[in-house]
Length: 229
Ligand code: DX5
Ligand code: ZN
Image (cartoon, rainbow, N blue to C red):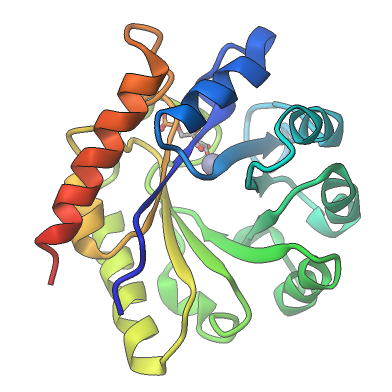
């Protein structure tokens, strides 16, 4: 059964001095999930923000779905703090987890939806044993760490593979894609089978209105969904 297409604006590309307003504008433009990139300067070569910022966003936007993408080492040590801060969804990198099964159960046990992420160099089959545990699988279509990078087309095959496995195993995980998603790439990822579209620069590109950017991207995604097989 085809899943609903949703836009997840990534606040990494927003103006951090006005995060609440930026998030609100992206939601008004049709974003339905706020994607929050948590970076520790170890797992990825960049640092962003931690639980206090998530807690502030939760306070400002009590009903928003907060999707925390943890690009950090030793995520088990920080997952409880993100859950406490108000995260709804928490995803961890397969590459960062020694005991991935345990980590996903930890996320669920705290009342959050667990997700797993794979880097461009990580094959889909490394997730075979956890696909029945996750709410979403996030395919990185750039190497994580920075916004504004070019989409890596090899991720399309991974999305197709995940859609095929979902169908053949009767599973229900969402397929999320992150990196380089904009008007020129969104159609391909939707036709490949992605249903959650993360976009940073495509939404907060500072050259146009955030609401309009989000609305255009979502419209392009939904029209591509009409023709996917
Ligand atoms: C990259 C982050 C992305 C980033 C995407 O490491 O995980 O969520 O914000 O930015 P764009 O859409 O600009 O590629
Ligand atoms: Zn992300």
